[in-house]
Length: 163
Image (cartoon, rainbow, N blue to C red; front, side, top):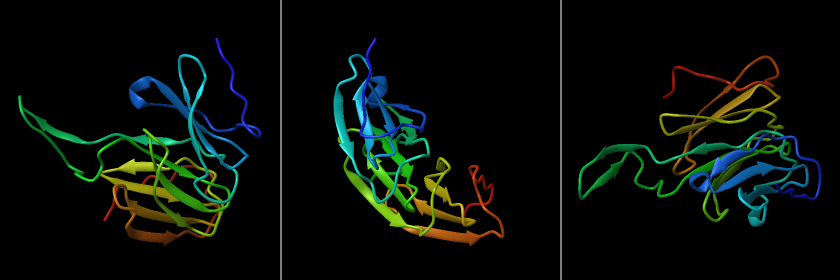
């Protein structure tokens, strides 16, 4: 058994990363942490943007399309490692490398993100308390669409129609 102390309270659920060798979770100290699952030692930490992290991280793995004896092809050639999607209460939406904590891309949606993000068909969806939903390409962070609802969103937004 082990324990880990961050700089503030932890309200997000952890996610297994690095092939189950580590866990990643957010903290109210504004950092996303990755710790060794066996001994609790810090692997890396990164501040993805302004604001505490309440939402649970979402791990996106490479989408393997086909395997033969000498070749592996992927849907996202730029997605060479697993990506952790995370939102902050300061309105940052970010993609972070699961291996080393590098910020791959980030956007400010100008409203707190309480919900965990959703990844579908290589698209990352983030929703905010101001009723905004934004969709980005997971590999590049390019904005695909946005929508404004007339109510606050505190639960994950699920869309069957993704452009």
